[in-house]
Image (cartoon, rainbow, N blue to C red):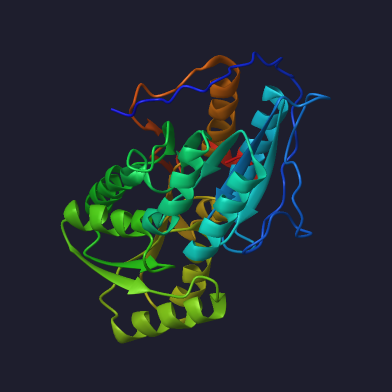
Length: 332
């Protein structure tokens, strides 16, 4: 059971009820598009608190655009200011967390694909009395780093659901494409699929920050092994690239994926991608900021010591119409 720490002073904050628009993608590392620290929200004319959001997003990642859209709205509604910083390099992400600690923020929201690399900086946050809220990656490590709550998907559960769906679909030979090595959430997805899939699964590691390389690597694998009947990617942009690889290799494989964006939803509508596992990143960003505001203003903690799950849910041709308008608005 996760035990919330008490703060020396709890101040009641007025809630501002203004909604915010979506923000654009980040860099790696950076604290905003111009490189300086800036607030992602703050509906109150005099924000009560500052929350630092620090993620492992690579540059231009559309998935984290959706997370930031949720965080923007939560910040506006909760009357807090939040700063955003990101790097897909664990040591750089740790430095960004330490920068937030040194600046004296009131709370930190963090994604943790490599919690070991972040542990010292997060321990310093605890020593400074700064509450930490984890989201998106690092569920299994959230308690050990002292996070008060976790918002995201249990990737083992999501992987199991995908494996069962692949079995029901009649798949026999799945290629699971991982866009980065050493990220626990990606490994958990493929492992969860393998444990609950009736056929065979092979992992293929690609360099996710180099999309031409991703395409050529998948194409080569499909050309080498025509028995592959499903390509399972772990992010929407990689699914769209895999569609091109399937065409280039003249493969009969179908493409399925984890995660969505507007283009991916269109690909499901057209039949280029069969389905996606949606973990609702908008909710992750929203809840991470909102939970910090609620804790700071009223001592509330969501989850009762357990993770708050935002997925998995399947999006396919049967229900894609229900989420398409939200995806195109940047919130699904």
